[in-house]
Amino acid sequence: MFKTLEELISVIRQRKGSKIKESYTKKLLNDKNLNVEKVKEEVGELIDAIEKNTNKVHEAADVLYHLMVLLEANGIKIEDVMDELKKRQNDKLA
Image (cartoon, rainbow, N blue to C red; front, top):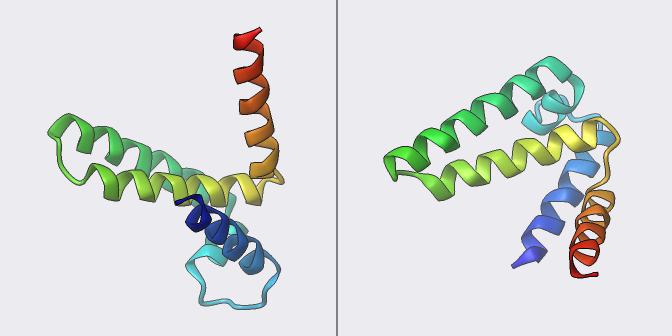
């Protein structure tokens, strides 16, 4: 299940270093304002989908994708985020 997420992270990182100009991911990585706006838009669409009980999974996938691109574009490694979540989990168990 999480292999798909790992593969997505790998593709985003590959696009970050590639010269492919037609890539939507590359476009987001290179345009911080567009990237931020897309995350905001997708979160709004997810909230709307939850409220209307429609397309929740589709919209959640959009949020995850755009968030992953935003993190990577800003030098925030998902591994560091996961470490932070693990630390919080451990702190609450202590």
